[in-house]
Image 1 (cartoon, rainbow, N blue to C red):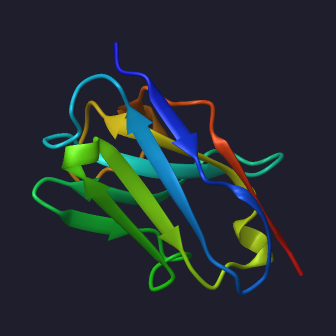
Image 2: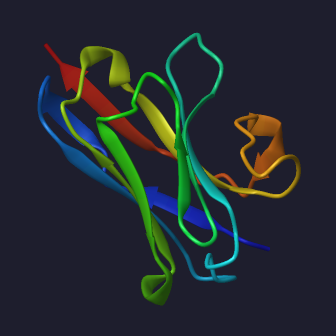
Length: 124
């Protein structure tokens, strides 16, 4: 069973940057579609970005132009570079692997193997 581990969150001021990491000791990510989602208190988990083989990416409108998803197959890791952070980016960030649905799916239900998440807090 694939177990994902997210890290890299923290408390930053608006306008700052963070890089989140998602790693696994299990199956390689190379041929998998991987996604980042986030969840704020009282809200559903929402799609942030995904990366598909051989490197296609997809972003939600709210982060497009500010966030960049990437992967390092040698390290079995997926990253989310977050720039120009806003207060509304505050959430717990999760990574997951797409196991069903369309290649460009943004549905939480199409992803699994969620880790424990990493908290990102952006202050004004």
